[in-house]
Amino acid sequence: MASSGADSIAIDECMALDFVGEIAQQHNIGFIGNFHVTAALFDETEDAASDTRRCLNAGQHFPGYVFGLGGPIVQHINIARLEEAVATYFMAIGKQ
Image (cartoon, rainbow, N blue to C red; front, top):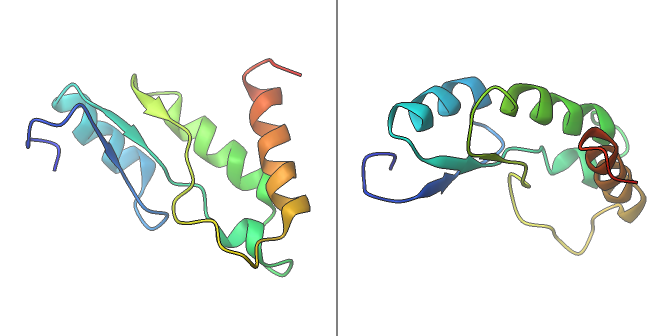
């Protein structure tokens, strides 16, 4: 995908950000992803704020990284956990 002539690529939650970031950097393109949507769906999985920080910490090392969901938002999403992820994102980029 990176060599197809696209300006950016989107990745799912299963892809490692460092791996994709290095490929994107080699091809001078951006990339978006890979928040684990399951962090916002189920209370028994990882913390949504921690996963947001994981994405931002890894992505900040690569120009062109865009934080994004790694999959679709479905009707059964836990809105409070999604709001927690969004609030964490805004705190990380310095917006309140």
